[in-house]
Length: 185
Image (cartoon, rainbow, N blue to C red; front, side):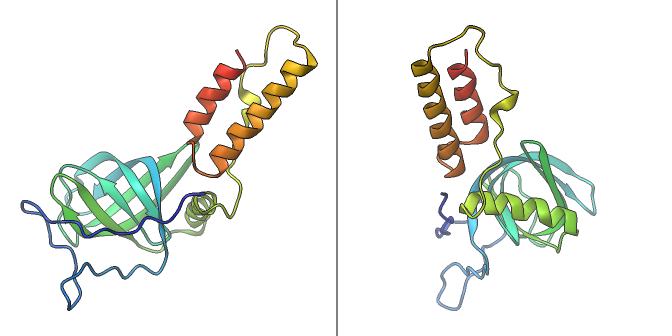
């Protein structure tokens, strides 16, 4: 099970927008929902200039995400983000809440459409361990030759172990799939 990502006190470099701070000078973390480590492809489009960047998300929560990029959009920029992981895609509008030059930007999501919210909640349920990860090894090639019951039982145990590691977030779906494919050769 993945643990929510705790926000460190990042430093601002270059011409990046400042990170919001509270009256004591510490990073102002007003998140109402936890964020989880999550790696997925992302496309972010500036709604005004239509500038487009293809990048990746490194953490995800119900109300926002952190996007890795060398050239973040300025603070306050309204964007449209599309996140793709496995066969699912989440898309919504968002606002740049902070930007770190040569690192990335924090986005706050606008309320998504119900079908988009379902995708986001599904991912977060899997990341938090509240719902099992959807992993179907049935599409993998089956062994070509007949095996003894002992070897078949060992493969079943390894398959179950890999699925458990994926559900707990220790392995990604792609890592688990690759291992299962090697196992079934």
